[in-house]
Image 1: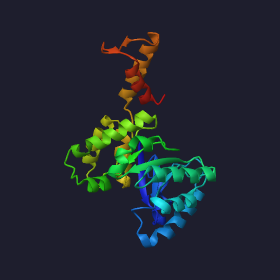
Image 2: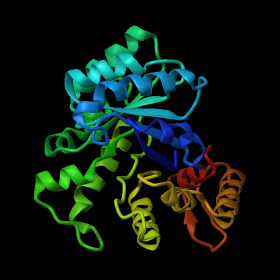
Image 3: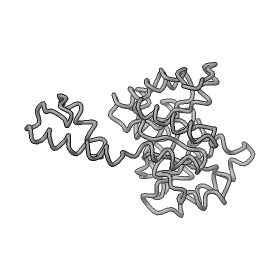
Image 4: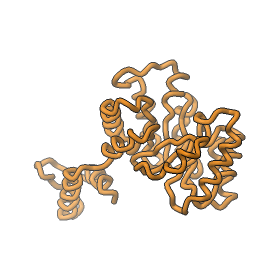
Length: 267
């Protein structure tokens, strides 16, 4: 999942064309994007829209924390639901929502959104919780709680980002989804920051505007040269009988390097 586009759950007109914006997934938001007075109506609107989607559609719904999130989950569960993103996630909340999906016989996965210091410190436990397929960081809320003001290179968030990548790898789940960039007009900066996130181990990024989607997709799509190099490396490795071999530049290669080549090819 290279890109995931957020869509407000209280905007039916935006929901109608959400799946045609080029993102690999759509995250329909029932939390921050919806004013408190509109949450009940938004829940009904989103539930009806999700039921209209075919099984296997790339539809994720961001639910509220706590008891409201359980009600959100019960309302939107259907064959067209791919997953739930859990705002301000905690281990008890994830476990409770997983039980709701179990009761409904749903195959949807869970994506805890780490937005508090406690959630970051519990990243490994969240990654190992029932039905969790990947983690995501809510950096705006988290930075506010930490009292952090990210600079141009955003190094203030490096520890948190690396910790979440590490927790995901240790738990054997998908690499995490990177946080949104709220400046949807500066696409050059978006590309630079997304490339840096890819180097850190992220393999996708959430977007708040359709204009961001092509940039994020491009960064997380291997180039033709990267694909060719990966194929060549795997061929050399297999020809060597699965042991140490040399790459096209004469550098020694072992299984660890080949694993990254296989990831590039999705095998």
